[in-house]
Image 1 (cartoon, helix red, strand yellow):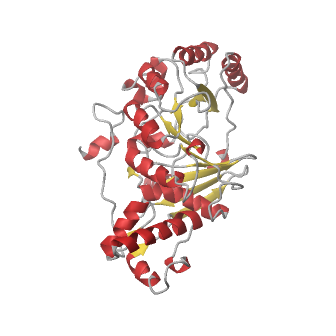
Image 2 (cartoon, helix red, strand yellow; image 1 turned 120 degrees about the horizontal axis):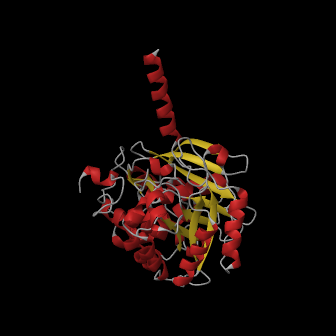
Image 3 (cartoon, one colour; image 1 turned 120 degrees about the vertical axis):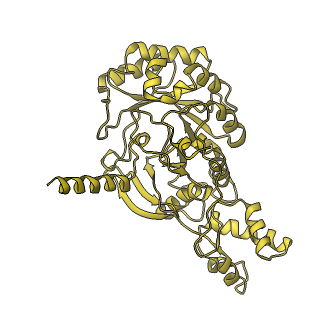
Length: 398
């Protein structure tokens, strides 16, 4: 696969899934244990010199301290001998993601600009509600899908996030909310949506491995029923997602005709609506208790007519889908070619779908003032670099 493949504007014969890369070592030579499974931690301990039985016991203890208690140093692990703690600290690390910037919206939404160990920026968002708190997690630095209504889609794909960087977002949110040790009841962070930067199914292995850690009952302990993975329609990976991860599925549909979806979700030119909806019908575990969510951004005079609403209902019924529809008012950003549908048009669309017996709530925009709303994620660092270039160009012109 060439370097240009990952930056294809529209996925072609070869999907833009970067070749699995070896995780680059830390500068200090230590092995970061965050993002590793219990078996991987045990293997690293054995490699460092512990005999197998002791490595198995220590791996179980370390796993508990990292994912249940949230500690970041071995000296806090009270059931590990004090004499062994420095030995572990010399060889292993329990790292947190670097926070470049943290913002809080007037509605309570929080957004973090994070930096990877090799200097790339990405974002995550926490959305508090009265009955839940949802963390919107990124799976890639940038995106390759170029959905025309999405600000994130205007970025180039830099690379996939590693399991440690995906799990690390959840752990960082737990830090910020003061939610260690992990508790199944009474916590603010109750749900996770894989709806941040990137297409999760183009980083399948890393997303799967990270979510298995998140769902482990002995660690972060978030039920798969409280995790939703959103895809723009990477059809070949959807069945594997259901079989190997088993979380709820959301699909960025946004249009009900080939012509319109080809325009606003270019991936449709490869995996069409019919193929996508059949994959939804075949999704393992989908039923009336675990409905598939169709995300539908409301674009003025583009996809918001009564006819579009009726066609959406027809398609859901035709494929016998246990489904609900999230109607998303378009969140504007500089340079966007679309406008948001009027509130009256959104309500009329919603009523048609509701009257057919399909739930179609309108999502309340959150975090717009800090560019944290749906479709707005694009790293502040990139914006700052662009602003700096604009100032330099203006100075040269002057």
